[in-house]
Image (cartoon, rainbow, N blue to C red; front, side, top):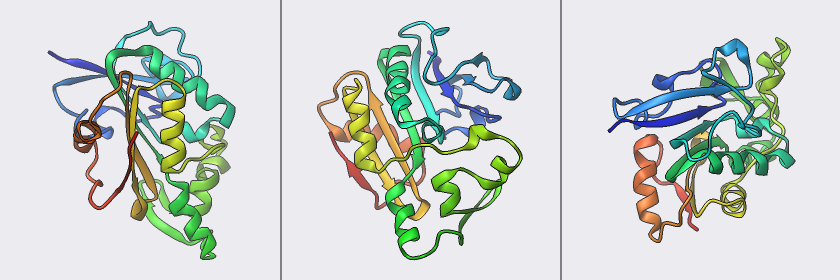
Length: 210
């Protein structure tokens, strides 16, 4: 049976740009974004998805968009994610890892390139505040307004309603990968096994368990 995942804050990306697990015939994608110019299936903010029914999706994919919210908006978004997920559903979330980024800043490397992306070289300043080239072009949706460490992200997920959550820090890529479920999962290893097919970067990572 084909399951459906909600790709929140999709931007111009589609299913093939999500994760290896979602990019299969087992999953159908529905794209949601606040920006109508990226032609989403649903025009909605992460903080207000009232056009979507409760318990509608088997999974949610949130990639590098929660950092575009203000801190006070994060609980609103997480509660909306929780609301539209089915009872046995789960959230896959990835965002910058401020702990590893701030180590670069502490080493006086705010502006030096850390890695190459499809949009060009990325520096610590871009990860902290948003991609400078996109902001210069007037795309203010790309501004970063909040940030997370593994511990802070896990705490937020659990505090605002998710039953279980684990976060994997991948410091060499300055990123966090996490999974959260509506219901409590007694064995964190079961969560980790569900997360692993979604990313190739989980070797030698630090896991924050609930």
